[in-house]
Image 1 (cartoon, rainbow, N blue to C red):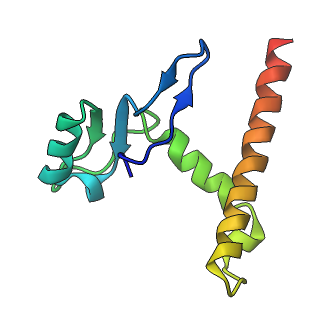
Image 2 (tube, rainbow, N blue to C red):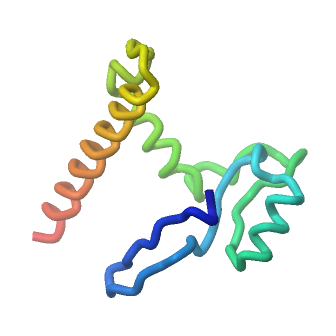
Length: 112
C-alpha cells in the first residue's frame, strides 16, 4: 500500500509522493513493517505488539475514530445489504465524499 501511494499536493503546491508519518494500532506493530518504514524514511506512530492500548484520549487517534463514527451514521454501511463488493465499496466512497464535503463547508463558514 505504501509503495502505491498516489502523489498528493499540499496547500503550497508541493507534491508529496509518500506520507510523512504512518499511524496504526498494534495490528501494524510488527518488526518487518517498522523496518519497511525505516527503509522508506517514513515516520511511525505505531503501537508495538504487546504494548498498552491506545495513545491516550484525543492525542492522535481521535480523528480516525470520529471519522469511523461518521461512516457508521449511514444505514447502508452499518449492515451490508449489497450482494456485490463493488457496490458496497461505492457506498463507502460516496459516504466519504459527503463527509468531506460537509467538513469543507464547515471550514469555509469559519473563515468568512
